[in-house]
Every structure is written in structure tokens, then in C-alpha cells.
Length: 501
Ligand code: MV4
Image 1 (cartoon, helix red, strand yellow):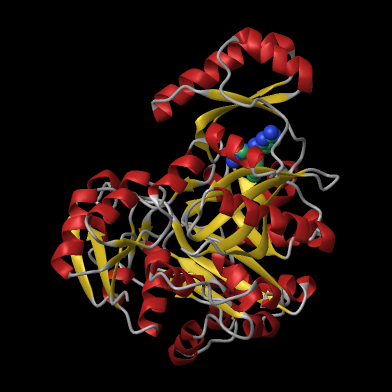
Image 2 (cartoon, protein in one colour):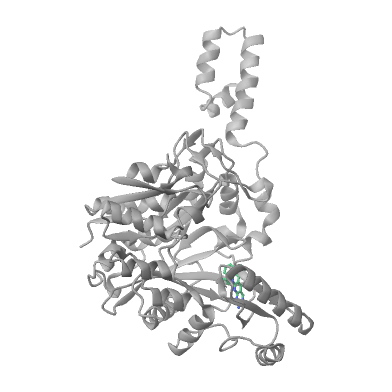
């Protein structure tokens, strides 16, 4: 049985994994780079090992240094989190070779799903619907034109080694085929060192709906229903919710069955996600499988009532699944908002810096997974995700209203962030109606970018300053009265009404 877990990650996910380990009585080992000496995951773990300089390539991606920390600490398992080494087949293999349990699938499942052409072929054989397109690699322009003749335009040319939107080209007419093929190939070669491409029919205004699955080492697999992830910007998810507002009970069950078939087809083991692309008529197609725990896993945890990290650890121990499909159901509704250190008004540029003040929302139905505290410096070397707000309500309406309330309470000063942008999304008509596709952000740009010129804190200060001037000059207030007011500046609704603003 696993007694000590090394968490080969940082940020909120490292903290989240450490929390479940602690509840299970499992010791934890953190690893950290130069930039993360003061990071929260280092403080939360039972012990911590420095693994190199700040750039990921030298630290969180450095297998030698991570394996050395595992050996020195006596960890018997490694949890890779998401990103970094989590979907690296060689890392999974190396853990196996060195007798350390990799909390995740074996190298074969990772490689099969990492190669999109092989994944497509495997899914077709397993009877899982894939987007109409090629059976294998496209080797020539003639072959491309022949496929396009069969399935019709528009199509997408995709890199086999791609995923997450890299190495994709949309082709709307025959004349673009030559140049798109060449562009997709060279982009794929440069990014992945592999220029194999394939072709799929282009699905217009699709939904991105993914299924959480769990599979054990004894051939059992279950699904924990879907997550609707269509609110994305340049392939970066911003808001996720479950249940999906568009699925019918029948479709939900059919897609769940397909997700289980997908997992079984690669002898999957651990927690994973099957991504589907869904068109307006609710036709669904396998897109890719993520062979790791995902950022948005907490909404599933909240609605299904399962701690996914704990299940991952039990599976890694070799235990049979502790849950049966029939006992799982979705209860209520959950929404996750991702809080990024980025500047919506400057093309969403990452905005590193020192967090000077935070107000975290509390109260009924709220979970915040984060890795920030007052005084921490957000490094520029890594993903700018600072926190995730996960909100539960008895239905979508309540989850939405509660999320709006929580976002209003959420304040981060010192680093630019997307909190105001998130508020705008939750106010947008298409989101409120639950009627949005992956084009939502683009289609609602004007509404979403009309952020208040003055954020709450700044507005407060303007009112306070004006009010103090008023008190000093007109009311001849004493310095003591003015100081009392200044110290209570957060009380601005009162000030507003007193000042008749
Ligand atoms: C597609 C598609 C339309 N038709 N494939 C983007 C990420 C990568 N995983 C696959 N992606 C897409 N593949 C076909 N045949 C549209 C997208 C797509 C998308 C998919 C999911 C979520 C957001 C997206 C944003 C733009 C394009």
C-alpha cells in the first residue's frame, strides 16, 4: 500500500493532491524550483526537495531530478498532477522500471491516446463514434482531395501528434488544400518533430463535452458523467459546468457508455477524460482522451460526491473500483471559474507580480482551490492559474446566482486578473440561457470586454477621497473622525448613502 507520495507538480493542483493524501494518512513530498521556494505546496507537504532552476524544462520536467527526490525521500508513488510530466509515456515507463508507482495509466495507454491517428483508429475499432474523416495518415494532396470529395467541405487538417488546438488548419475550399496541408505539416514538424496529419469533417459551432472516467487494474471502468467545457479562449478553458445544459438523459447515457468503451479499448487504468465534440443536433464524436486528472475535476467531485484523487490512489494500489456505475448520480449543479493572473485589457497577457491583498469568497456552496496567499509572487515561468472557484447549487439557476455572488466577493490586488471578465461571462445572455458553443467568447466579445473602467476597490477609494475632502472642508471634521472613516473604507455602501452618491 502506498505510504508516501511525491507530487511532481506545483500550484493549486499540488496543494489539492497533498490535501487528499493527508486525509488518507499518506505522507507527502513536494518538489520545487527556484521560483517556488515560498510556494504553498512546499509549505503544505511533509517534506520538500529542490529540483532545479525556475524554467520548467530544468525542474518540473526534469525526470532525473524528480526521480532522485523520489529515491532520497523514500516515496513509493508519484502523482504527476496535470501538465508537466502527466502525459509523458517515458515518465510512466521510467517509474515502472524504477519500482515507483505512477499514479496514472501505463505508458501504452498514454502513447496510444497521444497519437491522434492511432487513437482515432482504436476508437473506430471499439465502436466509439469519431468525426467522419481519414482512417490513417494523409500522405499526399491527391489523397486529401479524394477524402474531401467523400466527406465534403469544410474540413480540418490536424496534426497526429497535436491536441489542444496545435497544428490545426481549417479548409473551406479546394484551393486552400495545398497550402493548408503544407502549413499543418510544417507546424507539426516544428512543434512535435512529427509531421503526420489527418483530415476530419469540420463541425460548425460545436460543444466541447467531456466525460470523467475511472478504470481499475482488473478491467472495470465507470464514468462519472460529463463536464461542459465550451467556454474557452484560444483553447484555454475559462469556465466549466456540470451537468451540461444541452444533453438529454438518453444522450448522456449513450455518451457515458461510449466513454467507458473508449477507456476499455486502451486497457485504461486510473482517472481519465474522454473529450467529445458535439454538434447542434447532439451528434457526438470522440475528439481525444486526456490521460490524467484535469483542472476542472472538482465540479465532477461536487456533483457526483467523489474525491477523485483518493480514487486514483486506491486504483494505483491495485484495489478494485470502490464505486459502481448504478450508484452514481448527478446531484445539483456545479460551475468552475478559473482565476488567472492575466490582463483582459491587454490581450490577456500573463501578469506576474506580488499578490498584495486577497478576499476569498466563503459561505454555502463554495469551494476555492488555490495556491496564493498575501505576499506571494506569481512567477512568470508557469501557467498563470491562481485559483479555481467551484460553486454548487441545487440547480443551474442557483449555481449561477451563487457564482455571481462569490465573484463579487472575490478580490485580488497586486496582480492583474480576470475576475471582472468572469463576472461578465456569467452575465452574458447566452451563458445565462445555457445556450453557448465553443464560439461563445468570440461571439460575445463586445459585451464581455465592456469591463467597468473602475474596479470596486478603485471606486471605493475615489468615493472615500471625495468624502474626506467634503468632511474636511465643509463639515470641518476632526482628524480622528477622518482616520476612522479611512480605516473603514471597505464599508463603502454606507459611505455612498451618507454622501448621497
Ligand atoms: C475540431 C473542431 C471542429 N471540427 N474538429 C480544438 C482543440 C482540439 N482538441 C480539437 N479542436 C477542434 N476540433 C473538427 N472536426 C473544432 C475544434 C475547436 C474546439 C474544440 C473544442 C473546444 C474548443 C474549440 C475551439 C476551437 C476549435
